[in-house]
Image 1 (tube, rainbow over the protein chains, first blue to last red):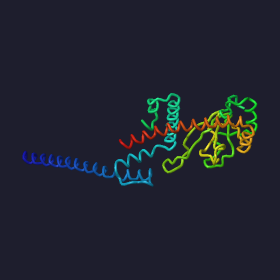
Image 2: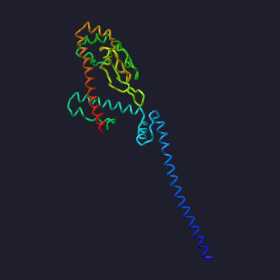
Image 3: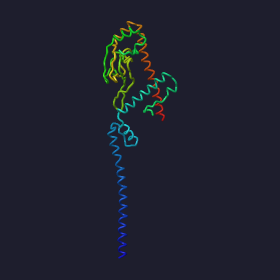
Image 4: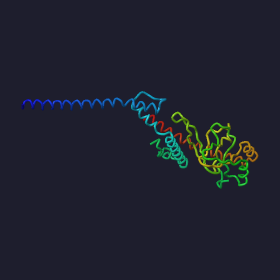
Amino acid sequence: MEMLLTAAVMSVLGVAVCAALFAAATRGEHVEASRRAEPPALAARRFFASAPDAAPASEPVAIGAQRELVPVEALMLQIEQHIRLEQAAAESFLHTPTEQSLHSRTTSPLVN
Amino acid sequence: MTTVRPDLLVGLAEEQASRVLELGSHTTLSAGDVLFNLGDAANSLFVVERGRVALTLPMKVRGKEQDVLIEERAAGQTVGWSALVPPHRFTLKAAALVDSEVVALPRTALSEHLSAFPAVGYLVARNVSAVVGQRLQVFQTMWLREMERVVELSQA
């Protein structure tokens, strides 16, 4: 009787260990599958963000696509701010022409 | 008329300045109104009486043309000196940034007046040269600064 019980317990333990190992292996495959699914998602975003000059999938293009998501209005404001700062710097140089003022750096976001 | 003596008329006697301004007509602009477009015939020279006028050039940003600010002119400043310089075509676009008022001086009437009164013509031409020269100096400085950055980026 004792031997029968020991065999039964051992069987249950064996099944439990197998089930745990199987679950762990399956979860790993699931993560791998979702990782493999990411590139199409990036490609879709690239398609909508910059369809005309879409390039083969690569990290730099993905970064470029993200940059293009900055609204044009915000970019235009940055350009206008840059021009105003550069004009002020140029006028300052013309008021007091020195090499230092000619090469001075502004706080423009486009050059920093 | 604005209390600021227009830069176009610096050095002129009060009466001389008044006679030049009498050649023009007052034009009211709402914010966003276009005074002239790039390439238009420069048939008038403008003196800003009130408000602010933006001078812009079209720049291609992400495949679309956007007006990029080149200069801003305020009360007392002159806009559109192409009217006095051949080939009399505007090389920028001008639009009111806020509600503004300008005096439009017709090119033909102004040229005839300046020819008839050479002393006035000399002073106005000198003042226009100052406006043109100042822009040239500012832009050659800006060009050099931008070129430095282009070289820096190309070497990076």
